[in-house]
Length: 164
Image (cartoon, rainbow, N blue to C red; front, side, top):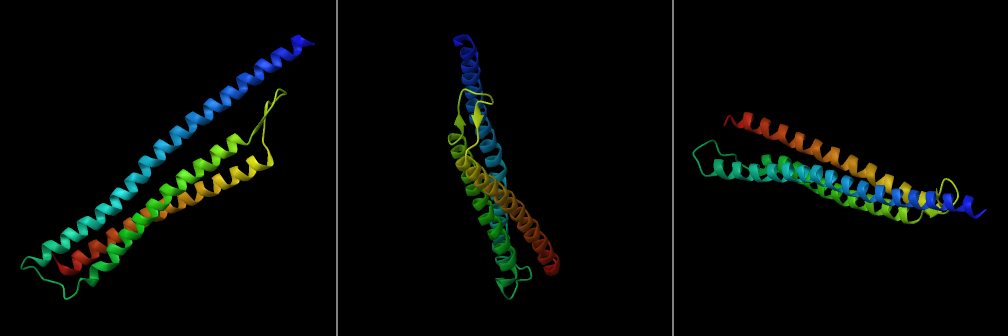
């Protein structure tokens, strides 16, 4: 009887180690790739704001047709700003999703009977929260990119309107 228990124990320990290592590497990979993508969103939206402000400064100081009001540029700047805020929110959502997935992993029950790792009620709830934050992060990232494109189109329309 001792011989039949020992192989299950060794297999369970190996399975526990494999699961732990896979989750750690998965978390690192997801965090690195998501961070790079979300940094790009923040950079393009912030760059749009800075470029538009520089453009306003350059036309205000020259003999080009000066707009009666800078309010024409408020909509594109606002859209770039909303895109920037959404990219920051998406970054926070990504970290929260990974936090809940880490808690889910910590709440799994490990034992020495096949399949060695079992979901608990708490781990299922934490998994659902992690998935919800993942989905909200993806939506926020897409909406951020949409606001960037929309603001860019408004800027092009303004430049054509001003015939600069």
